[in-house]
Length: 539
Image (cartoon, rainbow, N blue to C red; front, side, top):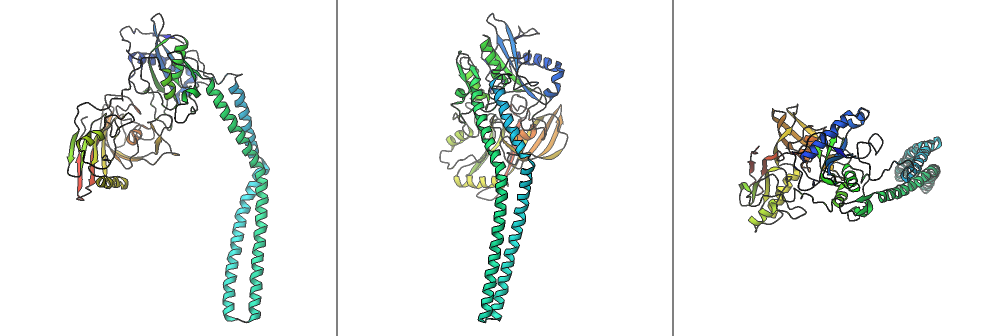
């Protein structure tokens, strides 16, 4: 599994620290290893169709105990229906062992699934279900018509009472009313019993289906726990923990499906088992992008946080790892540029790399700087937010009342905004509207993904400003304000399919994210004057 580099690498200096896996620039050695792996992938004709659908691969540069430098390769999940291929490191645990408990129990669960489908396809079950629905509809209409007839008959009797008030006539009308009510009750009882009998017949089948579902759920839960216990994971100190123990301290406690099967944990596990020193690591995507997530062919990506976050946090213990590049996000001594200010509010030009509000580590932020500058201000002050990587105009209120007014304008979508961005690629249309619903990717926060099932509506209007050297300068006019909306709409294959330049989450890393909030237009909360503020980007 250890591969020596085919090209000379002696001129490339080794990194001082191991890669921080959740935010990194690929080391030159990782790029060389990835290039060699990609040449191997291209040569595997039998895998071509599967690889075109997309898969994550990883490389780990390692040093042997004699000082030799080489690399390991891996892939996430399975490839060609197997966890094992000669060029790649093996899985931490092979679920597909022919005689393993997973395959045996999976067969039992498959048998339960087959029984459920067999019951659902039963001719009598289908017949009773269809008849039940028809009879319910028919009885509802019949009883409703009978009820209407009762009401009409009652109205007629009331008219007759006013015209023929004689006692004999009144007694006749009472008998008529009692008879009609009794007939309605008989009809109601008949259909109630008829429907109940059909429900009982259908229920025989559905109780059996529910019983099998409960059994399937129990077996699946037990299987997952047994499976997670098989993943005996090492760290650099030589300690061993299973997946359940690693995830005990997490919010959800239970490892997500597929945990331990990604490329990065496989690489580190093999290195530790074979006494290879990890030097640097990188992961890249190969093939088409998934429908929901955003992945681009050949681009490097950080490790996912949902599945790999807790695992890698544990596995890297004992290694000298790079600090998180995002831990220091604001420039020391940098002053915020105020573009507009009056007695009630101000607009600042937020630099790229600044948080709008303090993060989990209580880091420096626009809010902290503004609070220090205006200690008498009331309320939350920050009216809206910009991503840390986005520069541009940020609206700030000096009083609670002004803040509420401006937030109401944002909620009503009366505030006009314009962003300018540079995109990697050429957008063919001069203008248009992108309508792709967005939600957070639960396995890889803070990434967002497109989901027609779970996503919230997200709409962006765009206008191309210029095209040159495979880049598009574009203006965005967001109608909604979802997290990472412009970044996802630019990068997604159903959007513009051109990520914003420098987008480390959805595109390719650069010196910065080339996205800038250039223009704001709003109604002044006190004077009702229309305020227009503009600040062009530096790019």
